[in-house]
Image 1: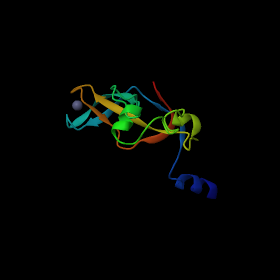
Image 2: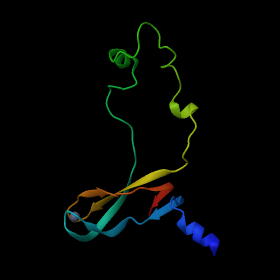
Image 3: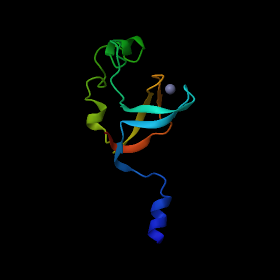
Image 4: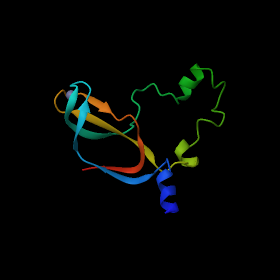
Length: 119
Ligand SMILES: [Zn+2]
């Protein structure tokens, strides 16, 4: 009994994998009524453009690197290769697209999940 109460009071509940349907009925603020909406997961992707922030030439222009060489900064491997990860899960962002007006909206609060399955 006590254990159950403790479990329920935990605020950060980590879900290992969450299943979501492809469509749901949800309120659309643009249509101002409940409509059928498509669900899609938003993934943080790569940045576009050739003006790379981490480029040595750009760093020199910013005055961050003087003289010759890279001062042991620019020849390092990617941060993900040598830094330890603190979190095993990510907050999933879900996009809802209204079928009537074709406008989209994301969820307000993300929930920590390691895997989001949309079926
Ligand atoms: Zn709508």
